[in-house]
Image 1: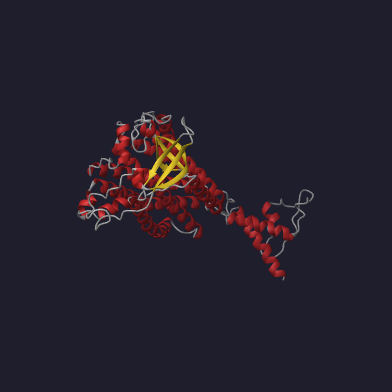
Image 2 (image 1 turned 90 degrees about the vertical axis):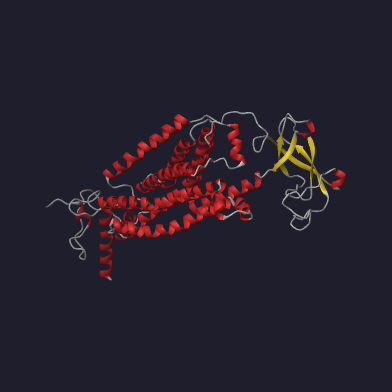
Amino acid sequence: MRGVTPTDQHSPAHPHEPGPPAAHPHPPSAEHGRSPGHSHAHSHGHSHGHSHGHGPASPGSAHLRKVIGAILIPFAAAVLTGLVVLWPGGAPPHEHSGLGLDQKTESGRVVKIEELDCAKAGAQPQQPPPEAQGGPGGPGGPPQAKGPCEKSEIEVTSGPDKGRTFTELVQPSASRHYTVGQEVVLAYAPKAPKNLQYSVTDVDRTLPMAILAAVFALAVVVVGRLRGVFALIALVISFGVLTLFILPAILQGSDPLVVAVIGGSAIMLIALYMCHGLTARTSVAVLGTLTSLMLIGLLGSLFTGWAHLTGNTDDQTGLVHSLYPEIEIRGLLLAGIIIGSLGVLDDVTVTQTSAVWELKDADPSASWRKLYGAAMRIGRDHIASVVNTLVLAYAGASLPLLLLFSIADSGVGTVATSEIVAEEIVRTLVGSIGLVASVPVTTLLAALVVSADRHNASTGKGTRPGTGRGAGARAGGRGRSKGGRRRRAK
């Protein structure tokens, strides 16, 4: 009697003819004694698990793993080394200037509001701007608000003077009015006269912002499920890298461009691998993002120097430079370009890589050229929408500035080449060029990698010698054979 092979135990001699029962060298157990229906269900489930697996496949080629590792492992090691070497250990201390955002603050609460006549309260009437012609309420001048003034009593709720109260007069034309019980932010000037040490500088928005953040987190988790949870964790880590490394390191005097490259690379590695897994698909997205970031850095450095952009175009930048003169402001501009482009780059590279993988799953016989052409058709639509999104995002952030220039007595060319506008144009165009370049680069890398991966998987890795068929194919064949016998029996 010949030896029984595993194939003989599970497959009949002919796919449409029932074969003799297989001999078992051991007594039948409960598993061996399952009914044919149960056996078919098991084989069908096994086949489905192998032929319709979800998520990106890990590299089937040892050579492919070595190539990806040879590029990404040294890069990750360099990023980690940069984090260790440049780690600032916190922002440097300084004396508060009391200007703008650089002032001590305490918490307060509005405890009482009393209406009274502005003239009796000694309030000075607000004057119209010099450009207005015709005086208050006249032609060309803004309408003056009329009504009583509001005398607000504010209680200090934090700091050394907790419990102390002071009053603040709010004129009817003021943009902000208070309500009793409202939480406010107080500016504290300890060297000022006692009656002028506290003033309301803003309102406390902790509660609405916290509720909005909770709604956002809930929406991400409900729709994204476990992947949404990982995305939120990655978001927290990214914010931690920004506040604990990038900002303090720049304040400590490190080169802003180097800090942005290292910090942005760390954010990219953590966010992509945490959200999408340690796979070939994610590694391709990382390589595409890295290539585009390098291009953005080179173009940004070239054109900010060529256009003689200083980066010192607003009050906040000027205040930072006055407090920390050692900060290189142009480098700060380049750092902002890189960090601002990183989030959109991640979206483009991950989407293009996923498109290539899904196209390969839909057509396993497709060559890398066919995959590249099909994915680029998707990428062109993505380019159009993303570039438009980026331009509109910058325009929305600079809307007040654009409004001022729209009414200025200057030509379009003069406005566009002024530093404050040229800075935004360079930021937008450099980031957009990086985004456009990321599509063909990432798509090409993904097409080459997925073709090499799937080709290797179909030519021997994990298959039976001489057959080219893996366990999933055998299980699917068993399920079809049993199904065919049942249909024939009917």
